[in-house]
Image (cartoon, rainbow, N blue to C red; front, side, top):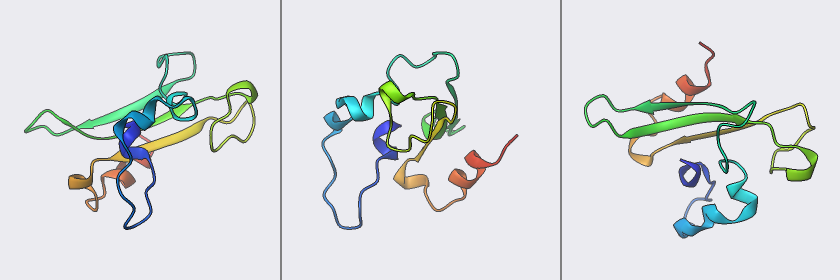
Length: 97
């Protein structure tokens, strides 16, 4: 899902999948399950394959992410596979339960 969350401007060639192993990206999922990590995934009930996900992770000053605000504000990640985009799934992932 991390790969699907990467922003690519219209017309730009896809990035190699290995890009998610770069430290500046891997920090968003590496050692997932640490205190404060929270996420949800949508699964297609017919195919049982992932559709999209949303996650929060608290990254600190020593391990800043792209959206770092401070040590008390988690960063949000969201991704929806291309074939499921435009159907409101991303919006539903952002609505609190």
